[in-house]
Length: 274
Image (cartoon, rainbow, N blue to C red; front, side, top):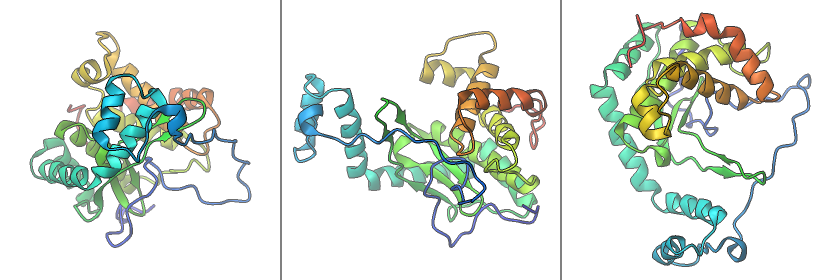
């Protein structure tokens, strides 16, 4: 990835995989993929949620406990589908505000442009990102993603407010800057150290691990090592989502291997700003 490449193709479709890496290419030399847990589909008889019923009746059933936890997940996704247009419009308004007024976003945009890249409303897009519920009981969500061939995806239905979008956009813009500045091995074909490093830097520089967000949003009121623990935890989660990562043990190991050098690297900032 040369330094004169742009982080997106304005006329290309937005990234369809809401992760901070492009879709894995096929490779005959790649190891056989691990069997993933199956997705859980809604069964009204089991969950209590019936999409054929009006939203307010389903909501009443949810309040009275007639819909179980699994049904609540499907109800939430159903409502996101119904409100997709509203959520995307709101997300685009937040995005435009960030481009105009956020110091972090404006700074990163200037640094991307200095590397002959372009990030604007043509390649920073808002879309609904469906969550996945797997048979092991895990819910998989994403706030956004970066694809070198397309740009930045913001998951409109997951944006709680303008500050949340600012953090998410800043995170993905750090990935865009890293993509232009270095030859990043996004897929981990050689190893996962590049992925671990850029995830450490994005979590550290975006503001998503500042104490107020950890405390008020995630309920983590720890006063010592909170910032470092948040960055490390989120980097491990992102590496674990890579197709080349075998398990959480490997994810923790590779993050630890690059931690010292990458956690101290605040480029293009002089220091951690947020």
